[in-house]
Length: 96
Image 1 (cartoon, rainbow, N blue to C red):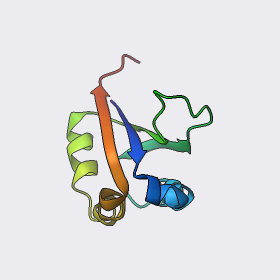
Image 2 (image 1 turned 120 degrees about the vertical axis):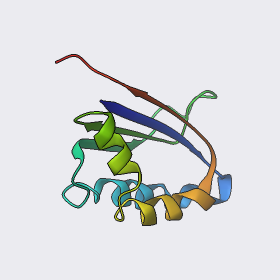
Image 3 (image 1 turned 90 degrees about the vertical axis):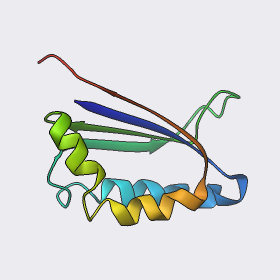
C-alpha cells in the first residue's frame, strides 16, 4: 500500500518546511507499520506546486490504519496541522 500526501503551507509557515520534513522522516524506525518513507520540499515552485510531498509504503490497509493512529505519528500531525493551508492525499494498493 502506498500513502501519498501533498502539503501546501501557509505563507507565514514556509520557514518551517525543513523542520516538517525532518519530523516526517524521523518516524522511520519509530512507527512500526512504515516500510519506507520519503519526504521532501518542492523544487519547481510552479503555480500548481505543493510545498512538501510525502510517500509512505506500508504492508496493507491494516498497516495504513495502524500508521494513521500510531502514537509517534500523532505529534507530527499536530505540528503540521496549523502550518497547512491545503493538503491532498491518495492511498492505493500496489502489485508486487
